[in-house]
Amino acid sequence: MSTSTSTSRATAFEDRLRTVARERYHDRHPFNVRMHQGELTPDELRRWILNRFHYQRHIPVKDALVLAKLDGPQLRRMWLRRIEEHDGRAEGEGGIERWLRLGEAAGLDRARLLSGAEVLPGVRLAVDGYVNFCRLRSPLEAVAASLTELSAPGIMRTRIAAFERHYRWIDADGLAYFRSRETQGRQDSGEALGLVLDWARTEADQERAVAALAFKCDVLWSLLDAIDYADGKERP
Ligand SMILES: O=C(O)c1cc(C(=O)O)c2c(n1)C(=O)C(=O)c1cc(C(=O)O)[nH]c1-2
Image (cartoon, rainbow, N blue to C red):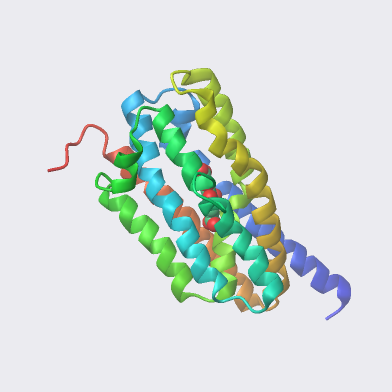
């Protein structure tokens, strides 16, 4: 194969990944659309924060499973940074702590988030689905699944603007999590994209990577479906 053919195939693959990450991303989900338009009630926003915490606290667990699949110190150091970002290097630091503070700013006691008792069944299934996918699949598929983060900086900017405009009852300090994710999401997705482009050289591997990313879009989508569906429905 000529160099120009393989280059154009690589570019087409990157385009496909970027298209899936953009077009199937959860910023288009009706619940997010309502959030961004300022239409959520305080109870709906609290339900989202409480249920999304279940996702947040499992991200470092899935990253530890991915880390264990990676060959060599350089790759593992890269991935270890993700775990440190969420768990922090000391008590009171890191993304999980920042999410707990977001909850407090919205009037949710941290014990309520930490107990996990109110997490919706569909949210549990979606998060389990993602963790188990990364546990069981190849390193390529696990890393490709994280590429939804290509679209994360954009949704963080939209969300910060929406909160500052429409949900002023939440203290601005509570938005620290979203601010930190804008930069981290860019770094994470840049690194992950480099690995996926490097590893997926055959058509079969490229198909697997695209399918993994589509699956992850479905995880984020069904998580919001569950939160949206719960509106006004009491659980026994
Ligand atoms: O709030 C969001 O819209 C959103 C989306 C995503 C994503 O696109 O997967 C992540 C996050 N947040 C996030 O906070 C986060 O830590 C994160 C890690 C990952 C991942 O798959 O490794 N995605 C995301």
